[in-house]
Image 1: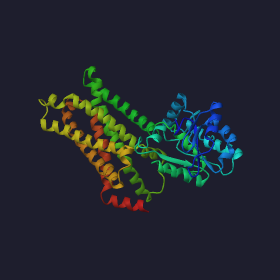
Image 2: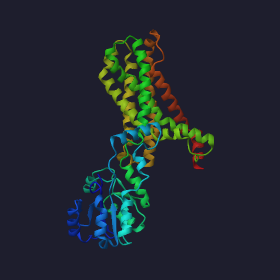
Image 3: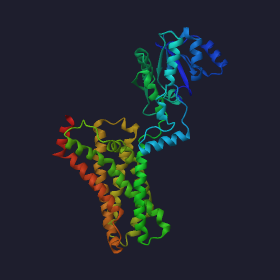
Image 4: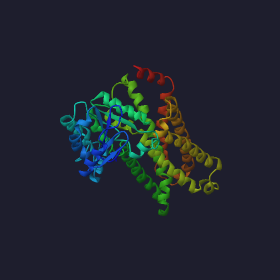
Length: 422
């Protein structure tokens, strides 16, 4: 759905005055089975009626700005699935993927071609508002933060006029470049979880392998199969949440180390590592989701009441308390990842949340997991079981936390700032 109606183009004058011939335009387009919406400052025409409208009313379009708000037809299910597979495997586009559509002309370019051949040379075409829903246009505060209106046009004055209109409507506006960039605007409308596909695939693979390893230990301990799924929420889900928390912050430390070795921050990272850097937020959010399930399962498990007769209460309550506090800080980071919240944070506040609170969350989680390992160690040793999954998670998170701490204190912090300032 485009800004005004699905597949529409809006006609406005450069100074926002009323477009003439409303009734004649409306009657003609209705007669030709095309949709038209007439407003106080202009009218909107269905994209299928663009050529007819321009041909019939070319004289009235002198010194007018035609704002194309149309979007291409939604991709098919096959295209969507193909795009997801392509992203997961690192390929671009697909057999008939949305990315491939960028090579073709946009609706704005096709409209501009019609205008160039039939309308006065003073008629301009601007691509804008196609990423703003009709509801948001009507209710300016419906989307928080408000969407950015991108304007694509070869006519600078017309583009500035449309950007000014967007700002007066309460939106942010950005110059997207020439009319050719309208292709990117249109294909981006059908973007499907960019950045999340790789993160979900990586997380799912880790969770699957982790669960297989844990299941072998579970059955080796002679646990009843009826408790398998509940145990999965308590152990693999919680362990992988810890691993993903580490995977969120570890690449920042690795990036700093690579820059120190190179002596510069201007050389691009290898593509796989750059991809890891790009999905850090998504990995962290998936980790938070798993941590939430783990926390709920733990709360329903009644661990303090169940174990207070067999385990010292101080240690038992310590690992639970630190887990609760760590989760609370994890929630703060998850909330701050929301664009509506992040947009209101200053750079100093943002660094505080994702640097200091991130390190604090990892430290609290290490205490939570470490005390738990101490509690289960005697039983694991007696059963002659392999390395606990909790111990593996503790090692991964410990490495990430220590690496981050070293990068935050002298002398490494000073060296990193020096390299990045070059």
